[in-house]
Amino acid sequence: MHLRSRLMIAIAAALGILPAARVSAAIDLKAGDWTLNFSGNVNAFYVDTTCDNGANTAVVGGLACTGDRSAAVRNGLLPAALVFGATTHQDDLDIGVTIGFYPGINSNAAAGVNGPGQPSALATPGIDARQAYLTFGNSAWGTVKMGRDIGLFGRDAILDDMTLLGVGSAPNNAAPGNTSLGRIGVGYIYTDWEPQITYTTPTYGGFSASAGVFQPLNAGNYTKHTQPQFQIGGSYAWGDAKSLSGKVWIDLVSQQYQSDLTGGTGSGSTGIASSVTGTGVDGGIKLGYGGFSGVLYGYTGSGLGTTGLFLMATSASGSKRDSDGGYVQAAYQFGKLKVGVSYGMSELKLAGDEVAFDNQLLKRNSSAIGGLYYSLTKSLTLVGEYIDTKAVAWGGDSAHEKDVAIGGIVFF
Image 1 (cartoon, helix red, strand yellow):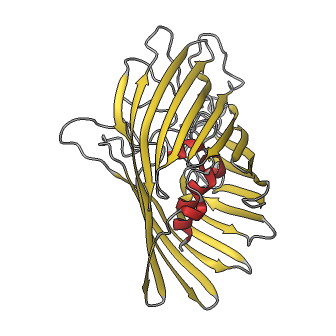
Image 2 (cartoon, rainbow, N blue to C red):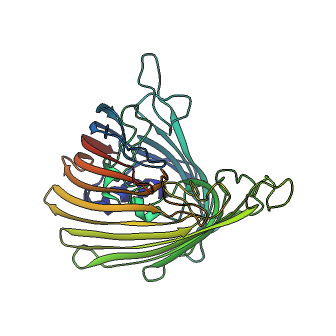
Image 3 (cartoon, helix red, strand yellow):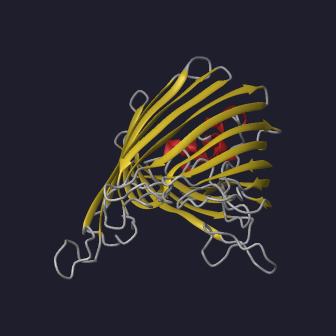
């Protein structure tokens, strides 16, 4: 089975919602020296959202909605997916290619598939082409990946998030885009799908590591890049279904971003720092024993931003904002039913040249989530979630959102 197909199945199996032994394999076809396969998912949810319509609710970067109550039929944290793969073995090398298409069920506006939706007549959904990469290597010396795929920093946080098969926070419910947020921005920074050249070691007794160079990302006025973004990660996994199993991991990300605006404080200068380096580290542990599974995750960074990599990472003058956050999650499997609860937050600190007084900049996004995940068949899971999300600004403004989500997801 192709690597990406296994990853899609592993998402469900790792959460304990679709047991690995009961999940259908992807569809494989043999064509000469190549094995072709495709896999994916389709999901849909009814989401009822109650927003905060009181006074003093303005939070710049807040992920709790304000205004009227809304109802929507939409995708959850995962869009639908159709992933094509091809693998072969040539000259002692395992070679693979993956191309993934991720359509949504909601119509999109000009902002694109990951922006606000356009719920009006004669509109149409879009396709998020997240993946296009090649791999080559073998079990002796490891694997090289070249192309666009999921990053290293924050990857395990989202893959172990129980809301990956559900909805989580949904602040854009009145005009749904391709996905909801899950715990993005309320427990972890989104790992994202980035152009990269990454090397992954073979697995040595449960240990493996990856390191790569990535396309650098813009950060506000900082749109000039003279070096790549760097990410590195390592993990150790142990145990099996009959004993205490677990995984620990740690990842690092670093990127320098530069501004074309004149820095310094002299005549003709903007007072904006000409170059900033943002860094972050995250880590976590996942444990399983019998029907129980639990996750503890955290991250911290400087000039890293919040919600997405290097978003809101600096003040207007280029002073770095620190950020941190994490989540705790516990779940138990009762036959086909899994019951899970989680709580997480993401905090953004003020830069050295900013003050809290009357400041509507985000201080904290947080959410508490309870979920029911029922395996109706080995491929189909029915989901019910209750989500309570809060956003607080440094100046004291705050917003509160409550969501109820009911739907299902099928993997093939």
